[in-house]
Amino acid sequence: MIGATRWRFRSVGSTQDVTFALAAKGANHGTVVRADYQTAGRGRLGRSWQAPIGTALTFSTLLRPTFATHELGPLSIRIAAVLADAFTALGANDVSIKWPNDVLIGGRKTSGILVQTRTMPELVVVVGIGINLSDSPEGATNLQQAIDSPVSADHVLDVICSGLDPMWTNWQPELNVDEVRAIEDRLWLRGEQVTLLDADREITGTIAGISPDGGLRLLTDGTERLLHVGEITRGPRLIIPGK
Ligand code: BTN
Image (cartoon, rainbow, N blue to C red; front, top):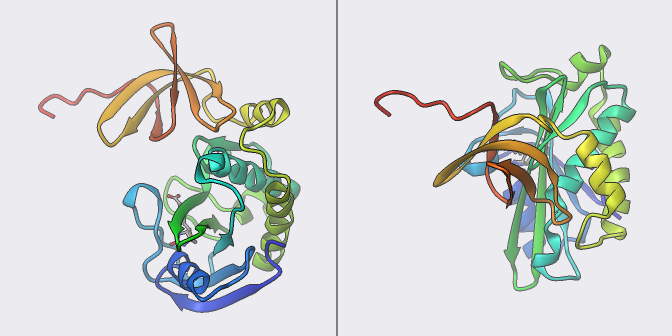
């Protein structure tokens, strides 16, 4: 059961590292590691993730798959869908999913997800989730602001764990038609022109939707491309003279 075992620390480097360390010592599937503050919180694409103490819900969850890595394709987007449903249930409006796994409220980032895997020697997955509760960096938002009332981190964590658990128990390696539709209904900038950036390319196109394996379907010059890594920005590529 996800969240049946919960650790809470006042301050750690990153809950990801603590969770991998507990996994190495045999911690159970579903163990949740929460920290009030992280001195070295990590984000996607090598970025850092920081929040002032007591203003965010930051935790990692240990998953021990009984299936192969390639069956985990839709994990990030499914977790984003669980968070989006949780925020809606907590009273937020205009909740969207920015592919691959940010959750936005009113078009502003509220939450980020970091999925990391290791072979120890069995496959271990650590899902890190950071949610702005009562403060947020410039350009982002937080749950309290969105629902206009104080939120309890314990309650938010309970709601999320009760969404993650059935997601995992009923795991299928591909999204079904209903899941695809539900995610596409919430997909940020669907039908709009975006630029997808990854380490070595920039692709401009129109978001058509997502694929059953959680990839992004992008229409470029009349051709649909399926993409699995990268970061979306709104609009066409900016060409900066001299760069
Ligand atoms: C992102 O938006 O790039 C992902 C952010 C993930 C942050 C969470 S906070 C809890 C867990 N521990 C970390 O070091 N990172 C994740």
